[in-house]
Image 1 (tube, one colour):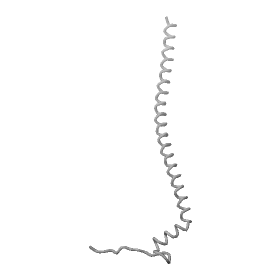
Image 2 (image 1 turned 60 degrees about the vertical axis):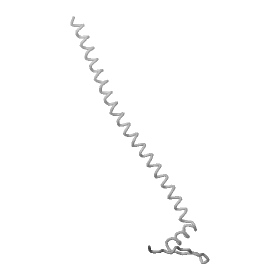
Image 3 (image 1 turned 180 degrees about the vertical axis):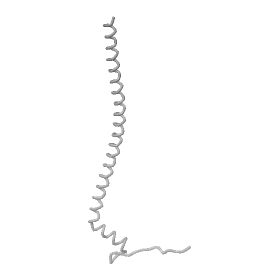
Length: 98
């Protein structure tokens, strides 16, 4: 009878240890899934920032190319300095006070 009691006790202890290991693994799995979700969201945000910065870099390159053209120099001279070509005629509206 003691031999049967010992084998049942051994099986009970082994079952308890296996269940504890399963519980620990399940708990860690849930934590890792949460961490994985957080990291995925961070990755998506960073990819969006990368795309935004690439678009910004492209627009800066385009602006840099435009600044080096004669057209840009003419536009700045017209807007900021009020310069015109010699043969141009400027029409302005008269501002009336009402």
